[in-house]
Image 1 (cartoon, helix red, strand yellow):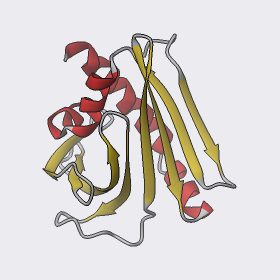
Image 2 (cartoon, rainbow, N blue to C red; image 1 turned 120 degrees about the vertical axis):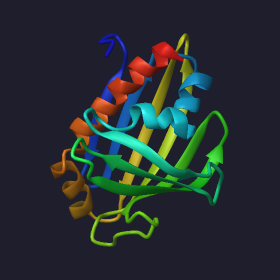
Image 3 (cartoon, rainbow, N blue to C red; image 1 turned 45 degrees about the horizontal axis):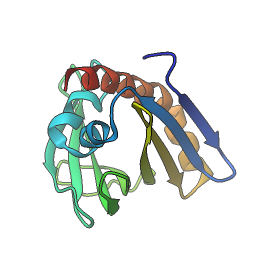
Image 4 (tube, one colour; image 1 turned 45 degrees about the vertical axis):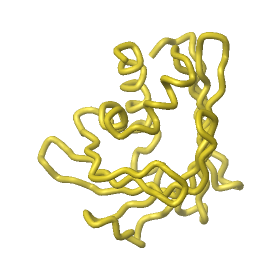
Length: 165
């Protein structure tokens, strides 16, 4: 990661939120595409040595992204993001969940509402991600599962991808 670019990771247990602010050395349209096109998401979303593999994606309000995080041992954990609102090029929100291969939500894992906002900062793009949980215990469970480390690694993968596309 370019150490001159903004990276904030804030946990607010009272509000049951994680807020990530991350700048990328690329224009908004390129960063937006990397977050909203499955062929690009598959290249950066999972922390190495894991891989994200899209099963289906329908990026529209009411649509969803169904994908697997696949480990080097071949184990696949499926997830889905149900798109709630989209303001093309500016922001979108999605309800995230762990699920089975068919996309049926696994209720024993917490769901979270992601709101991602993209803004231009000179030659860079700032992505602000607010992740909201229903319960404080849900937030704590995700943190304990290593979310910060995994998501940070994925964002570093995105840095590298943005240099190539």
